[in-house]
Amino acid sequence: MQYTYEFEMWRGEFAWIAAPFDLAGITQGVDVEDVCESAADLLRELAREYLMRGETPPKATFGHEPSHGGVRLVVSVDATLDDIEKVSAAQAAELLGVSRSRVTAMLHSGLLEGWKDGRNTWVTKASIDARLASPTPAGRPKVAR
Image (tube, rainbow, N blue to C red; front, side, top):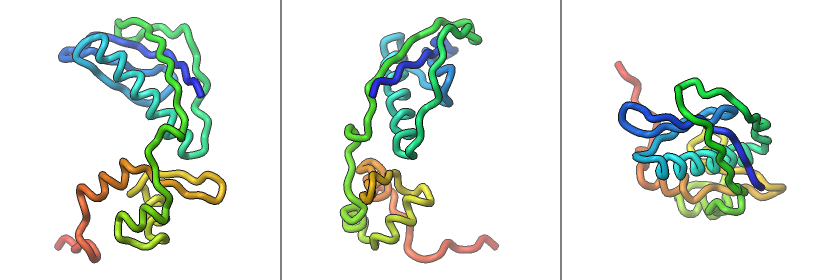
């Protein structure tokens, strides 16, 4: 699906900055081309987050007045859940060396990213890779004394 939103783009102290008017988020780049690419990446990821939660992003509005002395930038991206590298919850459990129910618990607590599609549960490969890159020690956390 195509998502089109208006951003404000302005020159910050150290970089170019872009922020969407109707969504939470902000990004930056070393030059105009870089910040435009970053704005597209931000919009794509925000749209995917809404889709993973089964929600519709807020309706885009246009004609905003820049509040940082910048210019309006219209960004349009195509975003679907099909573009996300994913594995089934059972495959995620195998990759992480945990049970399928533990994967479900990790999804609910935000330790992994994923979504349900009918009876299927999908887990993003990126969240699995991030979890594997920084494993937590086994057992309960120690109580600070």
